[in-house]
Image (cartoon, rainbow, N blue to C red; front, top):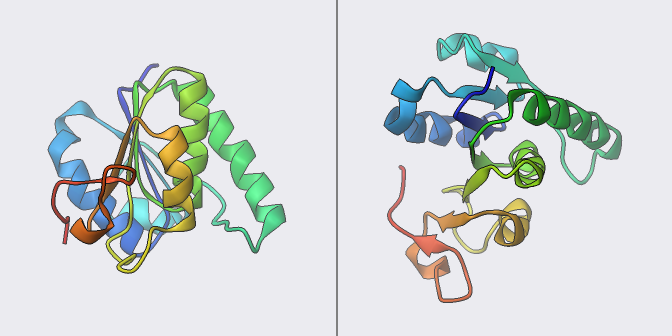
Length: 149
């Protein structure tokens, strides 16, 4: 079954921000991907996936997450992938580009001084690259269209 939107975020603030954004496309039955099963349950998201919570300091978990994300993206074949971070989001976006999905990256509200590492990578992979801080936006950086929180 092809789903239109894959919404991806790690736990914590990334997840909270994704839930806020997802209100805009809730009628499209998005599929959610996160790093903790209880988050899906708490949010009432029946159609979702859990992947390993990884980062650059946990290489074995990163390999597991890459495998899990590949399986999700290639089996679901979403038309759009949106993420508020972090590593699982950028991994899904990378695989999404391979299947022709449109991709949207919204860098975390918490990154006040500079873009996140995943946010910097998103520049090269995302069709739409956004920041929630106006002073981080410029002609070579991400676009600013307002904050989620």
